[in-house]
Length: 62
Image 1 (cartoon, one colour):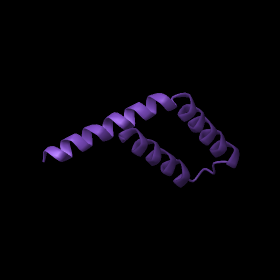
Image 2 (tube, rainbow, N blue to C red):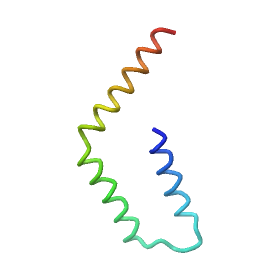
Image 3 (cartoon, rainbow, N blue to C red):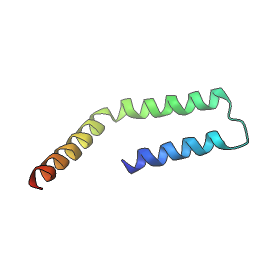
């Protein structure tokens, strides 16, 4: 989850810079991110599932 926060912070900092980012660059970044999600879809599903199950298990034990 920290990686998503890191990526979000990096994108926000890129948008705040005084140098203008062209629309094409932003679209390319989004396309690469979507491609990574599609490629690693199964691994991401299992990772999120295991994290949520751990959270549920630990929440029930409290």
